[in-house]
Image 1: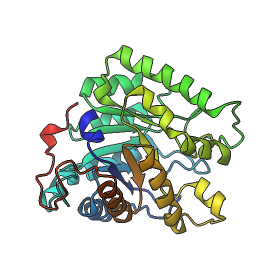
Image 2 (image 1 turned 60 degrees about the vertical axis):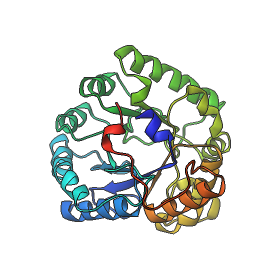
Image 3 (image 1 turned 120 degrees about the vertical axis):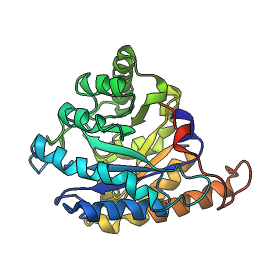
Length: 301
């Protein structure tokens, strides 16, 4: 998976199966959620990241059975959904990888048992080793996000002497634990966790010096979509009105050679990625809408 994620800038589309998403795009209707995923796939999403619980800390956690009950029908329908269409072009991963955005081991185990999930997006920052062990057992990739403390708990007063020192200490610890369990570098993705236990200045520092994470030699996800930090810079309270700022963060991420961009507005970002990639000469064999797409067999771990 490591090489296919690095072969071209990848777009991760966000699907929220809930009624309290911060961006207001969530739905409890599984058919509608699958329709959103289909549109994202057609627009160029390489990965679909689906979550059933809002990460907002001013909302209580939902029950384990409720979260599983929202996710399993989506997972069941995802494979059929992809068979209804085809890749946008030869640079899109097809079928798109399926990522599940969660943190509790009970949910991780339930979704991995389906055999249809490629990535666990652990927004808990690997609170303990259980999710890493489950990814090893089921041969799934683990996306490790930097954060502090338990999910669903506000960390608005968190301050760092040096955000980069704190982040590197965190990743050194989590990577050592994941590798000790047996996860290979082909199964690990890093996420600096924009807006999670960070203040505006911290988030801007992460964007500004994002290249520093490359020394881990792992795929890097940069969260850019409609983030609070964008709203703070521009004075925009509505997340849905932050797409222009999202594109600005995308450009910064492309300059910094981030590998994956997690977004709501897939088409705008996928279009931007392809134009900028063409300008900087990333298309090694020339750009073609009809090129053969990477197959699922080439994903690896």
